[in-house]
Image (tube, rainbow, N blue to C red; front, side, top):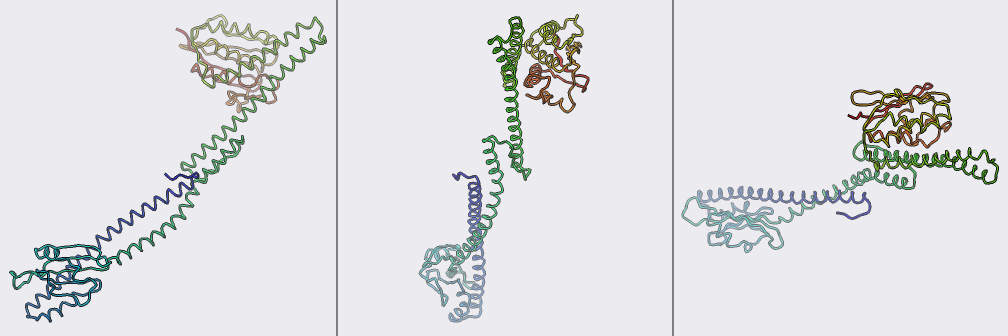
Length: 467
């Protein structure tokens, strides 16, 4: 593996190496095929000249040519460009030879002639006097006297290295042109492939600095484009988390500062004697309410964190839901009296036993009821309906508040979401309903909400009946 820090360099060199190896293999294969084809052509040439020389000998026997006449007739065939033909007798003595030849007689080995006299066709190749040559030898039987010793024809193809040099030169020229052209294409292709990765890297560095607004420009729909979409999705989620974090800090800071400021003011007034003795109990109760408010805020925050981390497990058990609701009415009585709100359980005389985690269901009911109290106008009613079917109890909590706009209903389950952005008539940091949703998910039940602006809101969920 090529070791380099940049993926562009690694990609470019890898592609170049693949092309180099592929073309090298192609060149070697091409040379091998060229070698086979060349030698096949040589053997065809040999057979052609073999037929010509055989025909010449037949004519010499028929017309009783002299040796000089036969030699003169053979010379055109014996001596050609890059080819030399020798005729030997069975004893290895030369009978006919070309007038001009590059390869000398002594380069022809006697064992080739001896093998050819036995009827074999001999082919050999090698370097002779710095020239790459190819030898072919076979017998030439005399037609008029079958019992006489055969002649041996030896054909020599010399200067083969010129053929190979020319072929290698052509391959190298082609290789150089292809590498140059492929290199240019590979450069731009590698740049195109790695450019989105470089952009993602720069974007990730911006993320590390806390800037989640930068996104990746997606130009393709392939795997790289899908990665870019995932990257942009991550950016949106990180930006949303960042906004949530800022909102959380702002809300918590505000909701903690308000009661702490009140408690501090009351304590200073109590210490310097501004508050008379008969009014001190009233301010003690106010400080107690503010302290409970802060404790609930901290507990809700911790519960939300544990629920999201999956650290809270429910322990379902059989218990009396009606009695639980009646006890909650008593606990919430001070809040109800403050706004003169009437909370009814319908029906309140029938007991319903369910299987659920009583502590977590109580936490969800408190959040829902406190939310209803906060948004309900003074001297209004909150009704809790209990309806039973074959296997479940359906709980509905209905208030007479301002209602929730339709476009905001799908967002109310999100952490820190507030329908009242001005924070008027509302306390808390907007995680009460998120906690309720998480608790219902743990119980494998769905909580729904229906609301009519100006008339009120109804939350509904179901719990399984106990056998």
